[in-house]
Picture (cartoon, rainbow, N blue to C red):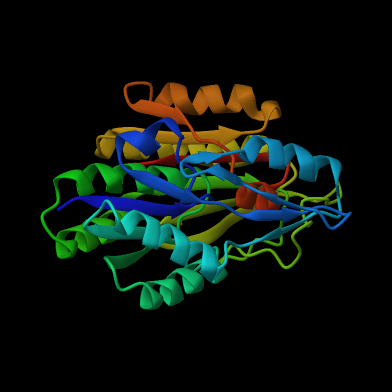
Length: 278
């Protein structure tokens, strides 16, 4: 079974893994305040996320749009020429428009077998989910085993996100305003946790010390009871010291910095801490 994997770029996977695991990203579109559109994907396996994040940092009126059905159909049809089957990984919870567009495109492409995999992960956890699943796909013999593995991953990934964006909901992590990251400096930080396929709000505080104490305590408990074999992380520069202290606890485990996606930037903004492990 020769399988390609399609992800939307809210799945925070490092680009060097694309070719290694036959991963093909579908990008978002940014419209600036002058009405000019900018495509995140520049080539079939190349994206220019960092450039577009820089653009929206400068342009507070820029808007982000999900990849449309036509783009999905074109990519699926292109990959049908080389591959026997497609696995398309998206989130019905975090980016529901993308997930729905993938489902519609699947019905319009008959040249290849397409399966849509759902995950509720966001940010670093989403990249960790994809990396673990694509490793499994390389050796998998059928779609049923892949689906079982995706359910297993959703149960075992643990993630913490620290953000001032209190627009993130406990069940959907959806922002009511794409520019809610432009929040007041007086707003407290909120600590969210992803575990067993669910997001929940743990605590709010103006002091990040108490919030990081909770993250470190959780990491210590997990380390004593389980083997941690893969870590993804991402944070703004002001949390470098706290990041190092958390990574030190799990220093025996493999760790990778997760690239910041456009979706995560719009949701989390400039002041954030994002840490996931399995």
